[in-house]
Length: 383
Image (cartoon, rainbow, N blue to C red; front, side, top):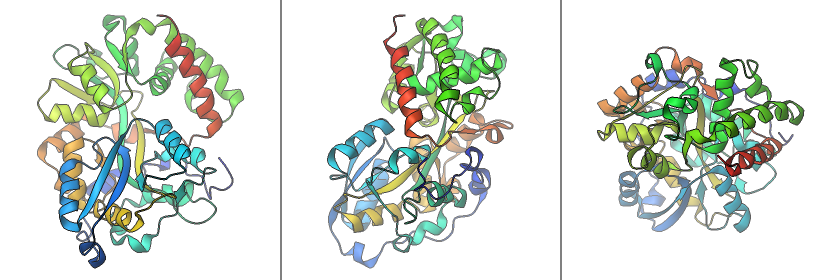
């Protein structure tokens, strides 16, 4: 990571305090400034699907008069490419993932966050705020990143068509011959999941997957083996997904019965009564925190701050996660969720699952470039 980043936060610190935060009480009501109440205008948001659900957007517009133009985001690469192409113009608020600071630090496409304009910042998970204050403190100007949603990537499946052996899933379920041609993954993270599984069966040494983040010399031997394994077993894969809708369609309409998925899409379907479920595997779910960040090309800065402040309220956070199925970085948001969310969360992370999370390490550009090289080799290989 560039020396412009003030400090490093260890992989395990990314979600430290999350469990305690989930049990904490909400701290005060949300606040709308008098200026916002008298304003009109708009704010342009590029963010992952449903992170700020339509009912929340409608409530915000009623309260402030500010129109939200919401564009769904499919990947961090898509966001970076869009922001680079326009120098951030046309975007006010965007949503980079916590481990991508090394890919943003040199771009100059984000502005530092002014906490004084965010009364509700006091409601946020302090461990997650610290990620912004340390890993996203570019040029010593303060945090360029605010936590919004945290979630995981683990195993989702059709409960009417599949049961993991022993009732406990594994990343290895994707590669089980019993489900050949009926699985789905996102290519680059599915390959990482394959690596974690390979560690458990002796095809990689314990810890190899995370050691690969240290240098190219340590990465290539590990990813050579992962890529070889994935290519040899490519017939397992029915679908490569890239966003929320493709995961939902895969399980409901496209013949997939088990996949490595995000938690939100599967758990939202589960809440709606579909025969699906999601659970952390024995190797540990892969965890991330997605954000709100202010574009350096923002043309609606005050409106952007009003939106960011609004969604930092516990009641708003609860309403949001009831809809999208992820988890909130707002303290006490879980106190405003329904019974379905609480049940889904308990079933997704049973026992010691929350202690065994694998937060993604900070990811430098060299790592992302090499991973893309291996990802393309796998995706373009013949089955």
